[in-house]
Length: 367
Image 1: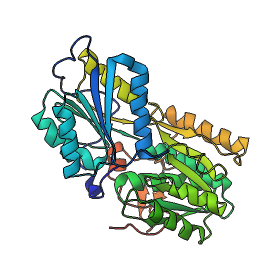
Image 2: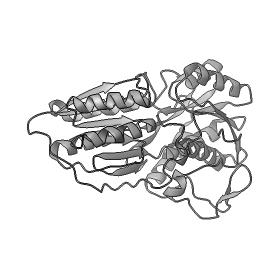
Image 3: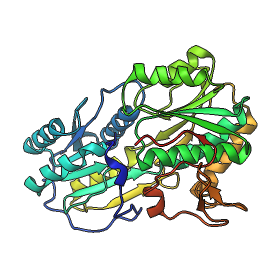
Image 4: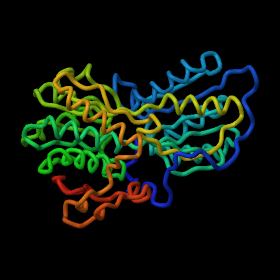
């Protein structure tokens, strides 16, 4: 997914939903399929981060048919292994290569220098080059909506959050989730456990079980497997699915899913290579762009709660609701410092550099 050393994750730039910048190189040869490569940081499981990106790959195949030929390599560690795999894909004629993990950013840039006619898509990266584009999703929008559902469903008012690393993207999610909960239950609290790993199902499960022993009756997570959802199902608790719909794992536990949708973006970028219009760009898309979706409600969620969440989702898509905008009172962090003044909203640059936990979160940052 995204590397733990990214505390400065986008300190110098931020994403825009407008494509721009440098013109592409040569067009794909007429009549020949575009060869598109995908590199995955974990195995393809039934749900999760890598599953969603592979669904995006399949969507490209469904949309373009014989006009595209895709290749994927799964369970590739960030670092030297990633560079080797990316370089091999470039050397074997792939015209566009998608690298969806923050820790793939530097290896992608390094290989891109040696293959100027190959296009690279650094997903969750932030450094561009003439043949390297970046894209990410506003996951925090979905987190806020899931917080509304959790706030309505929780009987204890105490939620848990199993988190990988304290990078800005994770902090955005924890804070938005907490703000969503407190928008319907001002006394709600969120207890966080840091794992310092993205994909470790036994560790994820243990963290969830520990939180369930602390009055937590609904849980969210930013990790790579379905282990937290499975733990919630086992303990008769509630959980928010992340990355994918996980009702197969937690048919009774899942109350809602925050999913990201890569198919349209991936198809658009492959098609641009095909017709010679690909350009380096940076996209940070959310509900409005169709990259973030909240839904897949579980059976225990009342229709009124579902409608409340879906109405809020429409408001976010229309720009009428911003998770990081303060209302009649300022937003403070959990040390009491004012972070968002009354009636004001954080800029994209401020969101992308987030380094604090909002009031209501129980716990400190793991440095």
